[in-house]
Image 1 (cartoon, one colour):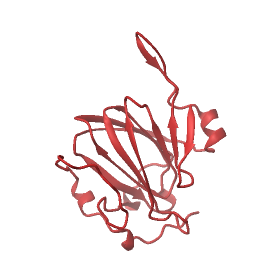
Image 2: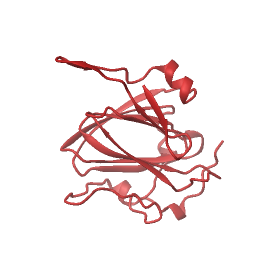
Image 3: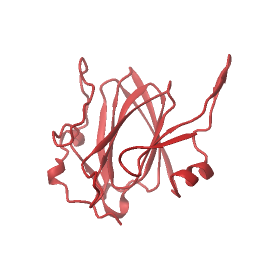
Length: 184
C-alpha cells in the first residue's frame, strides 16, 4: 500500500496495490501492521456500509468529545467525492478540508482522524461505501456541519445533479456555530 499524508496533518490517502490478470485483481485493503507503521495505532471496533444513489450527499457528520471517531473509508462500487473537515481545537488547519475521489476503479482509501467532520457525495448511479471506525455510534454526541457553508469553500460537483439530503443534514450548523472540539 502507498500512504500519502495530505496537507492537513493526520489525514492519509491510501492506494492499495492491485495484482491483476485476465480474471480480475486481488489487493489487501487493510493490513494492521503496515497501517500502524505509517499512520499509528488505531483500534477499529466496527465496520459499516452504506449504499446510495447519484446525488445523495451524506454529511458532514461528526461526533463530539470522547465519542469522536477516526474512520478508514473506501468505495467498493461506484464513485464518490469524499470530504473531511478539520475540527481540531488549535489546529492550524481548523475549518479546512481535504476532498478526494474514491471509486471502485482507483481503489483509493482515506484515513480521517478523530475530531473531523466527514461526508460524501455520490457521483455514480449507485455507490457502495465502506468504512471502519474506532468508536461506536453515540447519537447523543452526533452533530452535522452544513455541507454548503461558504466558510468551508467545498467545491461539490453538483452541476446537472439533484441533491438528496436527509432532514438532519439539511439542518446542519455552520462552522461559526460550532463549539471548538477539545482535542484530547
